[in-house]
Amino acid sequence: MKIGEAAAASGISQRMIRHYEKIGLVPAAARRDSGYREYDARDVHTLRFIGRARDTGFPIEEIRQLLALWNDRDRSSADVKKLALARAAELKHKALELDEMRRSLEHLAARCHGDDRPECPILGDLAELDASQGP
Image (cartoon, rainbow, N blue to C red; front, side, top):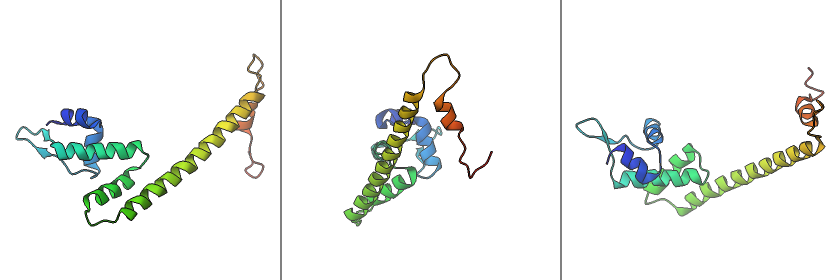
């Protein structure tokens, strides 16, 4: 199948498929005599794997590791679990940071009158310099 068909079947855009090939995440596709890329069911399966890994928060380098583990039949499932738990811990940390940012913005917004006056504690807080930084 051509790249458009592989994109439709995998849920990965043509642009991203080309990018993944360029960075070596997936091997370069075979080429037809016409020069078009040729994908098979295994290629589509790999692209779906990458898409699911991206959807669960794995960055490219960790997806590279997951692909290597997936293709290594002698691997230990403990290696895969370790990678997944590390990613889950990172996502939890990011979620806590995002929640703190949300609470901070809600606090600032509650202090803002939101009227025609120019005074705005939101902008004041953002413009506030740490005394050690100076102007």
